[in-house]
Image 1 (cartoon, protein in one colour):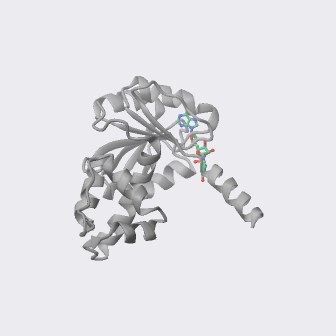
Image 2 (cartoon, rainbow, N blue to C red):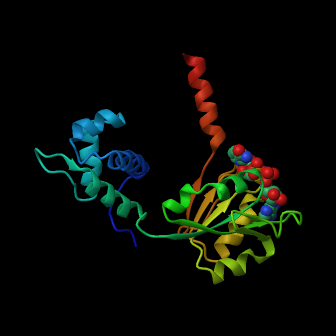
Length: 209
Ligand code: NAI
């Protein structure tokens, strides 16, 4: 069940950015920051930041600002990043392998447990010690290994099918990179990541300048 009522999608989308900035400041030894300084850094208004944090009970103190590591920890908890998650990837091609090779996810508690593919030439190989297995073994693997996150890195025409297989096996969140908006039941979270959309936006902006 949701912990916070009426938190808008827009606020949720800003949380990772707050977290990223605060983590950086904490790493650089910044102990305290005013909402004004934070807003200057992040390109948001101070009142926007206060409103966002009020959705979770508010964190600052009048006249003091925010304690950076406390705020960072709070946002980490709100996002759920204080816990660990077991992850699998479907599709061991260019993108699936690149994601499996990235160690940054582990630092935030996302452990990639296996990769699944249909290509017999890839099955049996491993990436950073993570086994590439036959897609036919994916359902059992999900059920037996307490997997919470499924990453979809297969071609577009296979993405919904693979998503459905993950959902049927009990996965509760789908991170899809195929250029199609995959659909999931209401109790399964989904993020469709369209890298090319951001590229097209970039080019639009460039051509406007
Ligand atoms: P790729 O062709 O290198 O890899 C796709 C892999 O999926 C192959 O190894 C293939 O054997 C496997 N596959 C096919 N059907 C499958 C199934 N039913 N179950 C399990 N595995 C299956 O493609 P790439 O470049 O890795 O891209 C993957 C997806 O991500 C595509 O949908 C692509 O459009 C999207 N994408 C890729 C980007 C990139 O930078 N490579 C950027 C943005 C999106």
